[in-house]
Structure formats: C-alpha cells, structure tokens
Amino acid sequence: MSTTPTFQITEFERRTRPGRMAGLVFDVAPTPAQQGWYAQIETAENSAELSKLDGEDRWTIDAMWGRGSFPIFSNGFGSRCTILQHPTDELAAALDERQRERAEA
Image (cartoon, rainbow, N blue to C red; front, side, top):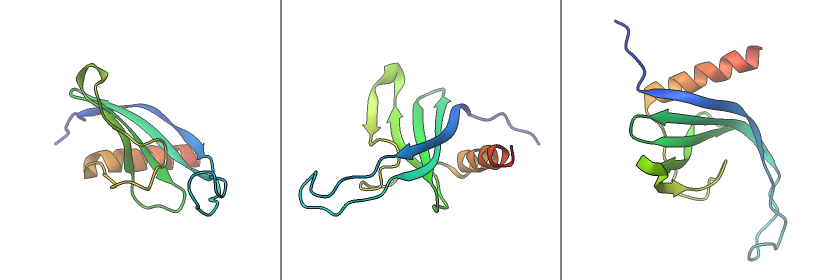
C-alpha cells in the first residue's frame, strides 16, 4: 500500500556551521567548524529546518514555523546546545534516502 507523504522536502544541501573563537562568549573553549546536511521541509501545518552534522546518526529539528510563518522556535543550523527535537521516523527515512542519493551523485 502506497501512502502520500505528508511533507515536502523543499531544500536539501551541504552546509558548514562556523566554529566559535575562544573567549568570544563567556569563557569557553574554541570549537571547530562543523559540516553536515541541511534540509527544509513543508507540511500542511508548518515548515521546519533540520540538520544532520557529520558523525551524527539522527536528524535534528533546528527551527520550526507555524501558520503564517509564526516562529515556534529557531536555534540555527547545527545548534546542539538546546533540547534536541527529532523528526518522525517517516521523515527521517526520507531525509536519509535523499542524503544517500546526493552522496552517490
């Protein structure tokens, strides 16, 4: 039985998250730049931005907007210093498939 997806992947690409310099914010150690995959999806109810940094095995929702572009939350590409939210298994599988297709190309 085939089902119609309840989402549409509107953007999918590789991105780099800049590193942080030591002491720029409080007294923290420097962090290197990180690369990973970026995806933007749209559903009937909202839109979201997701990322999967190199070395990670799960997608993370970085930002989500409701109807009329009302911001639900926005943490920035690759942010991992907040409570992580993950997509449904169906969406994660579709994003993993798109990642495999791009990696093979």
